[in-house]
Image (cartoon, rainbow, N blue to C red; front, top):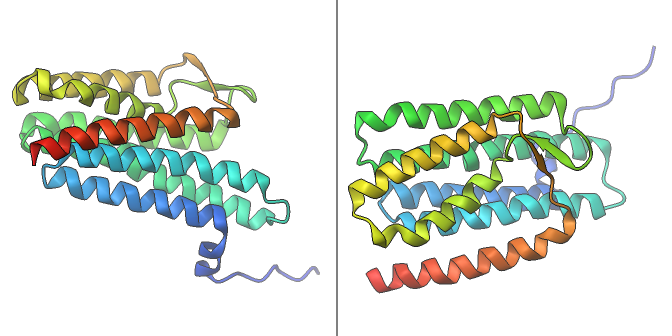
Length: 213
């Protein structure tokens, strides 16, 4: 009879560099949630943009580490999926609720966001990609990148109007997340474009936020 593989201590996985980067992304998401609850929406968007960047980095670095064990890889995949629920499900749901002044009308939309995120991640964990370069439906991290762009135009509308725009945009993105439309999986080289996008929007949104203080 073969000897059972010994269980590792839970916190030992936190010493794995890619998992540490994933946890940095989670920290950004928690900060983003805090900011939007407090009504600092642009600060929340900036925080979640950095969560996306860390979400990309952890996978890239994981693939470059040659001596990473299978256990660490499997744990990292599960950790990444759990963090994605916070970043791309809980955060936008709370953003919508907070921007809508916690009106009951925004509860259905918030539920749909979290539910669709959970469904998509569960489906992805079961089936994976259509092929090596193609997702089924729009990947969740794209929602944040599009949301950040939308917030560049927030000042052109009053609060009530923009809350409706935000509601509609999030529901459209949710529909695309759950659709059967094939979308390309961007390769490692796109990390540079993402980094530039995050830095530029951090600067622009940060400047707008600074002028409001």
